[in-house]
Amino acid sequence: MTTVTLIGSRLADVGREFVYDGESPDCAGCPYRGQCLNLSEGTRYRITGIRENAQTLDCAVHDAGVRAVEVEPAPVPANVPSKRAYAGSKASLAGPCPHTDCPSHQYCVPDGADFGDERVIDQVLGDPPHDHCPLGRDLTLVKFRAERERQR
Image (cartoon, rainbow, N blue to C red):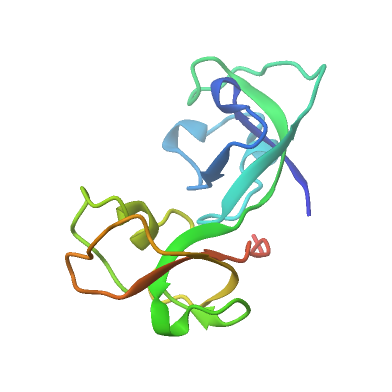
């Protein structure tokens, strides 16, 4: 389902993905709160369109203002334990990882998925980008199905 929201003008690119983190303290008193704060916190989104001929609005958070864009929930690439990595099955992340220099870290601790949450695997992508997991985990790279928007 496509939703229209406001995003920083510098970030308004079709295909860009982001995780909505919620309201900033700088949003207090903003007249555009209803159009801007209309997404589900913690959900990963992809920009699917930019509203042309819409004006750039002043914003206390974004220095170049905000623009109207169309977004939809996006799938989350993640590493999961290999024994549970089948398309259509449910899996959760293996757990926290302190190895931020590992090429797989962004998939072991992905934006848009929380530890302990079971998510449906939409697609199995294969081997993760690392040669060896420093924690000894046997992992497979998958895409979790895009979440439906949560009730706000």
